[in-house]
Structures are given as C-alpha cells and as structure tokens.
Length: 349
Image 1 (cartoon, one colour):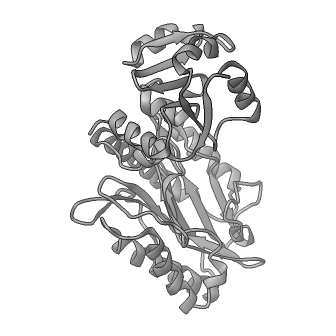
Image 2: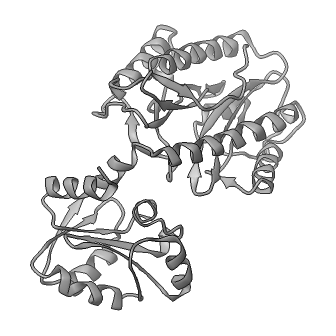
C-alpha cells in the first residue's frame, strides 16, 4: 500500500474528504520538498498538490513529483477553494496557527473544516528502507563525532567548548545539530535538558552528553554519561542502575511489544534501586524527519512497536544538588527483534 493510499484510508476513518497539510515534516514526507516550512500540501479525492512561493519554483520542480502551485496567501487559498466546496477538509490541529485557521475559514467558507491529529505521523512512524539508511548514516556520523570529542571531556574544560566542538565537527561533515547539544556536568546533570553552559567540568563529575546529527533532513539521537576522574560511590550506583534499566529495555524491543510495557520495564528497575521518582520523563520516542515523533514510549502510550520503527531508549535519573545520568540508544525494530544503531561505547563506572 502506498503512502497516499494509507493516508486516504486514515482520512476516511477520521471522516474527512480532503486534508490541508501544514506541518513541515509532513509536507516533506508527502511531497519530497525539503523546504517544508515554506510549503503546504493539499490532499483531495482527485490527488495531491504542493503549494509554495516563487522562491522555490525550481526547487519544487526538482524535488517533488507532485504538481506545484506557485502562489502566496491569499492566492493559495483562493486557488484551492473551488475544489473544496462542499467537502469536509481536515487541518492539522497540532500545527496550524489560530491566524492560519482564520484564513482558511475566510477563504474556504463553502467547506467544513475539521481538526485532525497525527494522521501522517502514524504513517511516518514506520520508515521506508531509504529512510532507515538515512537515519543510520546520521547516527554513524554522530557516533564518529562523539568518539572524536570524548577525549576532551575532562576537568578544566567548559561544557560550552565540548558542545561547540561537536557542532563544528558535524558541520564540517555536512550535517548539523539535530537539537541543541546537551552537556550537563556535576550538579547540572540533574537537568534533563541542561544545554551546555559556561560551567567548567570538575574532577569527580559525571557528564551527560545528549547529541544528534541531522543529515539529509533525517535525525539521529543518542546520550552517553561519562565519568571524569573518580565519581562518588552514590553517583556510580546511580549510573549502574540507569545502565541496567537501559540495557534491559533495549533487549526487550521487538515487533508487537507495547510501548507502555517498555516504559514500565525500565521504570520498575529504577524503582527497585530507589530511583523511580528520579526518572522524570518517558522512556523514549520515535526519530525521523523530526527528532521527536511517533511512536511515544511512555506509560500512557497505546502504541505497539512494528518492524521499521526507529525509537530511542533513554531512561534517566536526576537528583537535584547531586547530578544525574541518562543513557540513550537509537534502536531499529526488525522482524527478528531489534538492531541498535548507536554504537558509541557505554562506559562502565
């Protein structure tokens, strides 16, 4: 079944005849147009059309198999109005702005606008072989850069300098950061999203490095926590507990496994170590054109893993005033179980 066949089936289940796609990653996924933030896609019973402006005339022709309409709003909306008369038109409620919805209401008064959520994201959760290779390449580059930078993580070095070195090496290789690099040392390790600061790494610190490469539009995501010198026994204990939870959850990944069960598996291990309340986020998420996408690996998730999904497994423990640990692998779900795509060494502390 093609991507558009899957989408039209999902649209029918959602009770819409047409779909206005505004999320940049979804625009790219449907059209191949790499400047998705400056494009929209309209899916109707007759076909699909890419809308962008004159800056991208040549790019749209080169990148997308969809017919393109080169126009700016309000001409964009006027062009589509006749084809949508009398139809139920879905719009991406988790992306379209209030002002954008007002524009649609003004120009598509003869259509019924219906909010929908996650239709394309669910389709995108299962990667094509080409997407898998793109993400594999992004992760291989991230592993390479991490291994090159690991020796500079030592006492006397600023967190910012580690992050800048990572970013510089990614850019030299033709990639960019998938997100702001997290380098959180010592007590700052208690912040799950502790982006690099001017703090100087000290002897005895644990240092969490969370990084990803965006290469050819596709992302990778990995985290390693490393020791500088000899950490305290309590920090070492926390590290070993997180590593145990991470390795157990990775080993359990496979088709047919409930995402919520994976979260519970890791959370139960950390709870047995007295760290359940210190695990302050979900176990993981899908990775692709967005660094955070379906499926969601959290306790309330109804998602079930399928072959072709790529997910993170990233338990953590964060203790204010002391520090924290997170270890994250990027994992492909396969027919036989799984393949770990992130190969950078996980240290034994």
